[in-house]
Picture: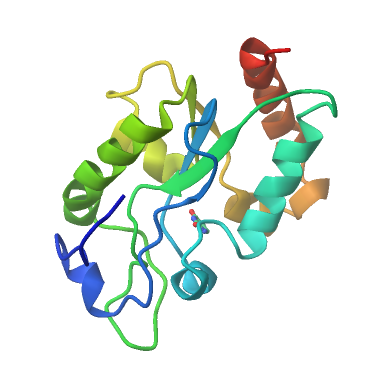
Length: 171
Ligand code: URA
């Protein structure tokens, strides 16, 4: 848990809420996305906008009803990357990702995931060395730009998720 108002990088200047994530702690599966966006900055929960709805749908479509898997969803940085009050979305810089990494490691220590899944290239590129057993899926925002559920990438993501979930599913 972030106990104090984190000021490890300049993203604190325009944030409304620190977005640690959402889901269960501990959890079997940990998704790491990119960064909070406009909606998340207001709600304080990860993936609550359109991308989040699609991610929820993907998780649902890859999980048969009687399966018992717990999930937590977070990001490489816990504050919205912006340099202005208006909030222009951008990717987190390497410095911001590095500055937030103690927050992420602390969270991972509490979530104790059996499997990490990178949602998108940003988390994959920064953390694949640290977590070589993690798998990657396409970022839901990318899928939205490709037609959402009707994009062929959607089915690829479902296949990857189903395979991973099968590995960790317990009765
Ligand atoms: N919302 C998030 O919390 N993370 C993303 O990567 C995109 C949208």
